Image (cartoon, rainbow, N blue to C red; front, side, top):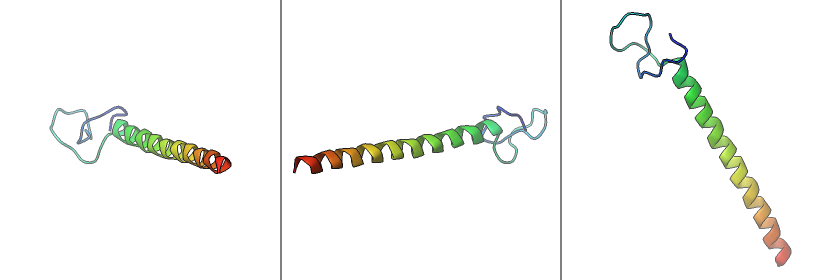
Length: 60
């Protein structure tokens, strides 16, 4: 398995055959970074929403 093999079917050896099983490490890293970005965005928007709710509460 190559570290940066972005094919949908990972290569298990260096031969030129098509397909394979599973996914490459590059795909795993890419999906992990995407999940972290989604979690960070949700946290940031939640914090901004809480801050705006607090500010609106001060105005009442």
